[in-house]
Length: 367
Image 1: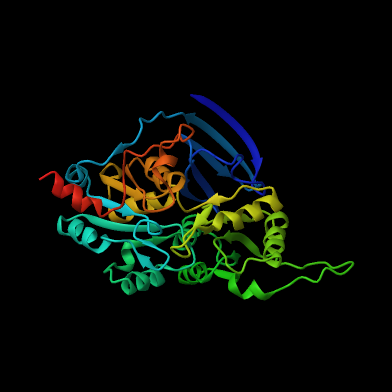
Image 2: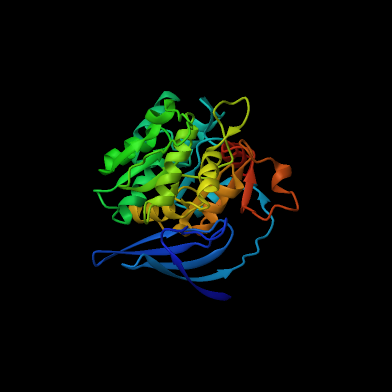
């Protein structure tokens, strides 16, 4: 184990590498201490950050490298089902692709509920609020309550609440309606979002772009109206407003806008802002364990009694592993068997299977 101590400025990035360790944030705000956890995608480690009135922070890090055995094909679904109390499902590539439900999903969810299992649905897609996702589940014929849904749009607002983000500060949003709705429900002031999608910059000689100096956080998510105006505005806030946070809902490389092909994901928007600011974001979606910790506290769940089911190695599976859960990779989304078994892939789930409806067929095969 290797320990390090750093002194850095809060106005610089909270993460000093593309793959920062998991860490506990301690924010001292007017004498009140608040804690939040952010995780490392690649290491099982702890980093403690403390801010003081001089806008300096002290970091202490310790990293442990974890070697995992190769993933095993799921052969006995009953054994896995009986070993946990809660299943956390990713949505895109697991429950649906685009607006099309994946075969066998309703029957599988019904079977798990009949066995008394708690079901939770966690998505990195920030375009919708929890309420809007509830309507999507309903449209697809699935009975899922708002309390069972956790989107990264909600995670961004929940994170700001967890650190007592000042209500007199504003949030600049590079993203879609889901983030705006969750910020509004949490009582935060915001600007940007889809409204800035049609704005353009006329680069005349001597042109100077103004920005709101009261912006204390820039939240970046998937944004189909992403443009140069948003890049410049977000960059100015992060670089010039003291202590301004740079928060990403996720860094997914691709997403499923349709079931026909993969599309550039929220990571492309985050990457543009990271490139212009030379800052790494604080990521609140998977594989950060912020949502896992939130869920465990909300429902009183033991993490060892959770199975994370997802189609992405670098978000879903790491999310489960960082949280100390069992993990099941399904091959119905972005990850193929060849990608999983590639010698260069170091992320190994506990089990893998073709799709979640294999719970039904594999269950029958073991009777």
